[in-house]
Length: 153
Image 1 (tube, one colour):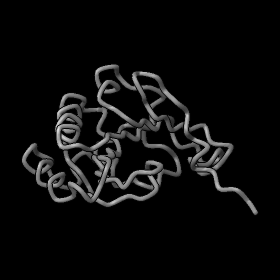
Image 2 (cartoon, helix red, strand yellow):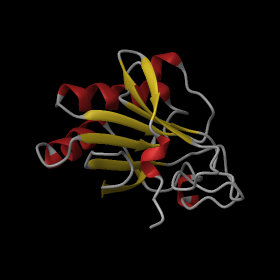
Image 3 (spheres, helix red, strand yellow):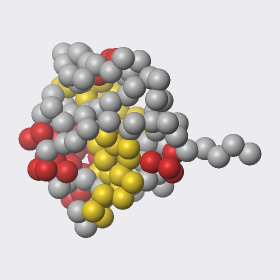
Image 4 (cartoon, rainbow, N blue to C red):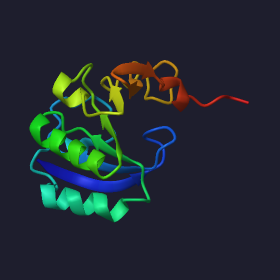
């Protein structure tokens, strides 16, 4: 599995500073997608366990969450990255355009964003969005989508 970028994220997961990795090969191709570079599976560099370990060590103590942008199309690899991140003290998050993910991936998450981007409904910051962000606690999914909504003063 390849990745297009590694970034620090302050808004992807509420109350977390995240190491965000954009994995390439997304088969969904949402109209209006803001990350079209993630569609081409050959784009970017190959992610390896050693490379992921180096990334996570670099930000250990500075970031609290590892957030995967996609990657659910390679569940075995993704699960290994989540296990590694958790073993290093990170929480884990997945952003997917799917409406659900496999149980074996779900079991390794603290946060899950689901739903394809539908331009007319907007993203997580829009109250009309079809997308949902969940905090996962003891297997229960708590909808925290409203934490992305800005109040108009």
